[in-house]
Every structure is written in C-alpha cells, then in structure tokens.
Amino acid sequence: MFRIARHSHTTARRTPRRLLAATAAFLSLSFTGAALPHSASAATEPSGATVSATPASPQVPAGVTAGVAVFDRQTGTFTEQLAPAATFRSASVVKLLLALDFLWNRSPDTLPAADRTRLDVMLRSSQDAAANHYWSAYGGPAIVARMVTRLGLSDTAPPPAGYEGYWGYTAMSARDIVKTYRHILESAPAPVRDFVMERLRQSTRCASDAFDQHFGIAASFDRPWAVKQGWSGSYAKGNCGSGSTTAARGSDTSAPASVGAGDASVDLSRPALHTTGTVGTGDRSIVAVLTLHPDGTSYGKAYTDLGRLTRSLNVPGGTAPKGKWYGTWGQDVAVRREPVVGDNLLTRLPAGVEVLVGCQKKGQLVSVPPYTNDWWAYLPQYGGYVTNIYISHPDNQLPDVPLCTSTK
Image (cartoon, rainbow, N blue to C red; front, side, top):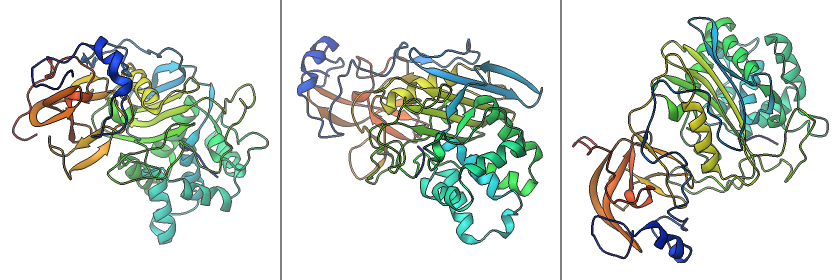
C-alpha cells in the first residue's frame, strides 16, 4: 500500500480431494463467494504443523526475495540478518518517517486536532490520504532526505526520478528500519516515542483500504507487539471487516498502473509485503522483514509466505501463539462471531491464507455442495469462527485440534 465435502450428507468424512479436483470449477459458493479448489491451499507445509518455539531460521519460501534484520535491544546484538542492506520500495513503512519528520520539532501534546487525527489513522490503519497530506505539504522527497541525515540511515533514498510524487517508492533496507525504531525507542523525546508506539500497538486488523494488515509479526507472536506494515502491488481488492469496500488495488489508485523495475537496487514491479515493528515486553526485539513475491502472487499467498518466514526467525522475547496452522480455500471466507450463519460477520479472510486454529466445536450445519459440515474452527487471532469446510483438511473434524471450552 502506498500513495498519490463430498456429496451432501453428514457422515464424518469428506469426498476425496481427487473428486473435488474434478468438480470444484463448477461449484457455486453462495455462502462466501466464488470457489477455489479445496486442494489448492496456500499451505505447502503439513496441515496442522505446530509452531516451533525454537525454529531453524531463516526460512525463505520459494520465489520470495527477502531482507531481514532482528535486533535484540537487551543484548544489543542482531539475532538475524539476511541481506539487511538490500533496498526495497518501502510501501507504507515510510509512514514512520513521515510521522517522525512532522513531529521533529513539535510536541504531540500541542498538535492541532486535525493532525492528531491524521497521524492516528496513518499509523494505526495505514491511511494513504493522511500520508498524501504530509508528503505534499512538507516537501515530498525532502522529507526522506531530512530523515536520512537525522537518523543516520545508510540505504534509504527518495523515490527514483520520475516517481517523486509516490512516497511508497522510497527505498529502505531492513537495517535502516531497525535504526528508525531504535531512534523512536531510544533517542526521540518521550512524548514522541509514546505517541508513535502507542498507535503502533493499537494497529487495526483492517487497514483503511480494507486489507487485512495483521500478517507477519502480528500473526506470529502473542502480544505485546507493535507494527507498521506495508503492501504494494496489484493484489485483489481488500475485503477486511464486515462492510463493503471500493479499494481496487494494494496500492494508491494514483500510482502508475504498471512500472518498470526501477534502478538496479529497487524493484518497483513485483508485489511487496513487509512487516516491521517490535516484539516482547519492553519492546525487546526490533523486527524488519521486507519481501518481494513473484508476479501474480495473491495477497493470501504473500500473507502466508511472509508469515512462515517471520515464524522461522529467532526473535528474543517473542512468544508463539498456541494453536495449529492450516491452509484455507475459498474467496472471502467469512469469520463469524459464533459458529452459526447469520448477522454476525466479523471479517473475511484473504483468499487462500493460512490461519491459526485454536480449537473447534460443533455449530450450525453448513452445506456448500458437495460438502456438508457442522464443525467450526475457532481462530483466536480473529476472535471468531469459520466453518471447517474451508479448512484444508480432508476430515470434517480436525484430528489434532482440541474442542473449544464453553467460553469460546
């Protein structure tokens, strides 16, 4: 984001996947939208794989280009570095620099109400309109130049010639993002530090453009965490939340419909997805994971691959959430407050995304021919349920997931 199973019956087994592969193209999913083949999950690791507390790292999924840096503030050392100086177009991560530049000689306590509102939605919900305002009003590329000098950034640069109006084309590296967070936490005036970090801790699941932005750090670790995410590319429109959206792309609609690869160091073309922020009590670890994905990658696939990479990292102070990771299938799969169909929609999943299943329980019988199922999976990171029909596993009841207690 950047600126200007089976035949209809109720037995305990689903139709084998080979039957689905032959018939899925003809299914109509009136419950949640257009069908994707049940065997075409975003997952490539075994379904129900347990999150490892001490993973081998880093594990970069096939086809993904990554720059990674994890800094342990307690020991003052990096625990992970993978191409830390490589530059990526920053997408919305540059909003950190826009906020810091505006707050450089200002106290958050004296800000006009309009600026407090803009900064709030820019940092929490990644609103592009707010970023457009600061970019246009305070010098555009000059903002980046000022922050490079102020923070001593090594790899950060304004958008390339011809794209000066597009703040999301600002180049940044993983190590420069670590420097940016270290400035916020260790050098910025306390009111600025608290203002920025408080908003990053309150990151909304649904961004202003209706994309689900709780990927990477936000999905890989239990709180406390704080995040500023970034996405850029021709992803399908967002559909996060219970309302409708007109967002058409994973980037600002004023950006060029297509661009070349830029200079040799900054790719402006391939889909980008970034997760940055802090993890653990006292913001112990600073994490920056920048990724580019093959052309045509779906948002759900990029979301899943970034999540797997992030979960593979050694992040001191981070605690992996309890549950099992499963692939999903289907377009705009509904997450519901209770395991019933009705007026209880919480949000919709990115197509084909991997989800953490905490427990399962029986609920309303749902029929999506040729599938019928009354088991529902509870997704703790969403606070709601999806019918097990859309979990990529051949059984109605997931064999390695506990039953939900009465409180879920």
